[in-house]
Image (cartoon, rainbow, N blue to C red; front, side):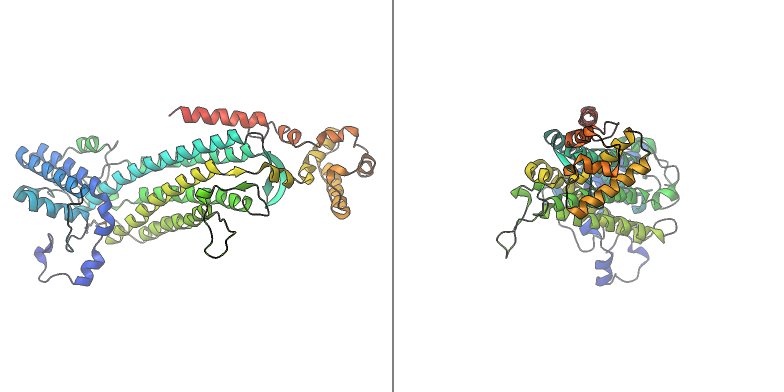
Length: 457
Ligand code: ARG
């Protein structure tokens, strides 16, 4: 027996029933489904479709279903094809005839998208919270590593010295942008669909603004066809989660490399590493590898939802049922990677001795070129001169900072005794005092700005 089987002369094939069934996935939406139904019952009563007694019975019945669900007292049936049908069946079983009136003027098409929007709004709030927690961990890390100087890399080749705190604060900056993406995704989700019906709008004149206010939506949809077809906000949320995954994956990649024996710049805490079943010496950065790995899954979920949508004309097609699995999966995954990453960076040890050993004097080559520029040489020429000098050092296996002043003068007369002033990591770092540069002052300003942002909440 199905609620919609009036026009059917035989039952659904068991395989079809299993194929069509979305309950194992969409039962996640029971809280939102019941909230939506309570608001709908209130609206129907206000519109004179339900009596106050019927409405109260419905609302009471719905609340008892949620309560029983939360206490593991609900058994679903194989014929409950999705959470909406399951709740309606349970309601009718509990309160009888009044329950049969709840679906008046409503369709599962506007119902499911109401539930999904409510869920997405809550999930985005949760992700925003995790982003903020990670930002706090980043700022703490930047403060404790404030003066540590590390090689800054391009092409995984040592480029210029930077403060480790500058590196950490780069993550703060990108997390700020992720937060603004979350805000936009919320805006796209924050529209009430109920009242859109199956496609053309409800045939009963319910007060949609009141429903929106009750459910906490800040606006009401302006077009029913758009609304029952809309999954743009799902794709947008999934793209934000994928973006978070991609970016954490990049930082994970750096830290994985830095934790290798060859670099040894950082050591992960035991609590966030795992061992090998065979090789007793191993301590692997699995936390970071999983963050990197799961970013593939977040991208996949985004692509999966967009691919489902792309061939569908307006309005609802059952294909759209496929939106929830990637959405729910990404919500869980993104929350997890944000929390794990925050813990990994809060607990990792920076091996300052190894970092120091890792600094190659060639990191000062740009400063030497800038020195010649300050003496009056055009930059292109200075670049050539220092390039030749670097070539000489590489060939003769001499550190850039060990070349005698006489030798330096063979490359350019402009080198003076004061060139040795350049041979200081602190000087090189503090020489980048532009806004957004790596000087101590600039990083302290970044941290102060970040703390201001975090306090604003
Ligand atoms: N389980 C469906 C989904 O998730 C609910 C909407 C079904 N609507 C319909 N007309 N069959 O998309």
